[in-house]
Length: 285
Image (cartoon, rainbow, N blue to C red; front, side, top):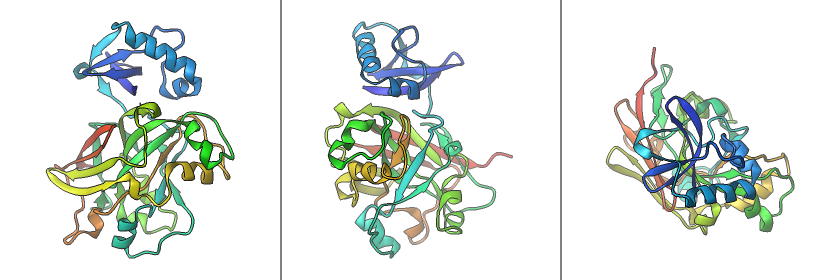
């Protein structure tokens, strides 16, 4: 299923995308109205949603809804740095011995079609197309061979970065957390539809220019290894987002620099999930 958070007639709720329609989850007792609650409910909620889809009813044309970020305010948004060998090579940094994570603050999250702001304080705005996965089960100390069980599904992330602010701190957090620097979406594809998350084509365009062209098979630390590593330190909860790193082709390493500018559109496409598209504007007054 493609699980989606959306707004229709000024009312935000949860549903599933089928072809060019959204199956509205509202009104079914076993389907919570918010995505995080739906994920936490587990298989009973998924089963209820499947039955609602099978009725062929409760549908809204996709063109009539506003798609939101799947998890508008995740409890945790963790992202890994230097997880593709070609990206490590273009940065000139050493291959990490352990997964290296940083935090994106949840207020940076926006959805498909929303505007990315060029900050008033910087012109070094960059993109990073990434696969992200969503935790579906509260967990701690998860072994690698069981990690797939705690994933609810997969989505697309654009780890937008304000480069000069990013490198002011070894934690990266501020430069990764500007408002609008966390596009996610357009939906969550449940894990049963993805098959192998470690063999998906990933492409990023700025306008019509293909900037990144890779495959998740090139990740150094895979999704399951990330869960095993992180869950040794912290409890992972339904709705937590973990973004899996970017391949080469980021703007900061282009000559001349390929930073994002107002008027441009950036799109990230991942095989089996879809396309996340956002446009760039000057930060509003």
